[in-house]
Image (cartoon, rainbow, N blue to C red):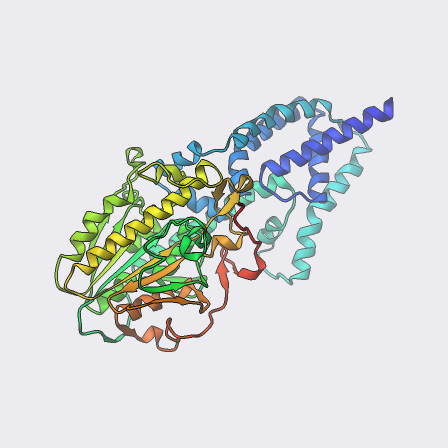
Length: 509
């Protein structure tokens, strides 16, 4: 009976350590489990330890919804929290899955397990557990430092590779915010620098160039790319170029869009050398029309680049009241910009598109039924964006000037709940496999372009469509020539990784 009792206590301790690791979004490792088991058993020995456990498990439980959808603390979460206006942040809470809410019962389960687990009394035998804990907490970091020959910033390397979940959780929050803060410090410094574009030549004939940046669209949910439901009537049939091997630079809006619209080298960007300053250097009038939040004085990175445009229009300033402003409300501003003059114009349009809380994006009841309500709304939101692009195309055709119209999505998403929902996930290929469609006056037929192309080079494409030749692009090939870009992406954590190293996430039908 004594043996059975010990086995039950051991299983309870193991289960509790597993739950606490999983709830914070970390991969379960043997050494991590052992360290947590030792910690919990020590906490059981005192009133202070028991109170500390309650606080710890309460914080862990509160993090479960984030861990379920986005994993352990990372730069993607930090940037999404800071770069998202309050109404969008509220959308996260409105879109929690029932299973996520039910996971709050983990708190009660953990408390029950804690009553069962054994305690490690503070006596000489406990030194063996402390020795094992000390060895395990330093083993992985020290081995990594030696194997990778790290010769500086040892403290950061130790914490970055430590598998003790409580310390790693705190460090990851700090590290993610530190990266974000340093990025914005760099961005602020770059904004003080004058643009350094050296325009060699530009087109004499005035042309309208429209760049539409969509939101959260993975191409395999589009009929134009093979999805069985007809949700892209315009892009499936219009004259122009449909690019089949285009990949987004990153898995979230901040990482990807900033590399679409600035001169960049994959990791670093030159915020002052952006799409607006390039156009202005060639005498092109610039407009930025956005349905994403500006957040007043606390401008996002993207809106800070938008501020370089001659004319700027945002529907959202960050108040909760603007939670359901449909993209169609941008159309009058786009039409007005196109007809404002006979000068060459660059018009950048930034959509809410298929942002999470998909059913809040669509103006009509979904006409598609696919894998539940959320995915049905997602499919519908793509049709709505396709119709939106067709409307802009009609506006452009009605003008006297020739035009080019580019549609690209910032990033894709990955499945949750057996394919019944979608979320950000940097580890999936489909988070980077997005549509690129180009149409305009010069396109008299429909082409499917298979050249592998990386979103890091989209600014080069825009310069060519605007008819601008710049010194900065002199050594790189034409975006429209048959060369092959490397399929490399920025994973949102400041690392360049091969797309082939990521996991596949096909549509579940």
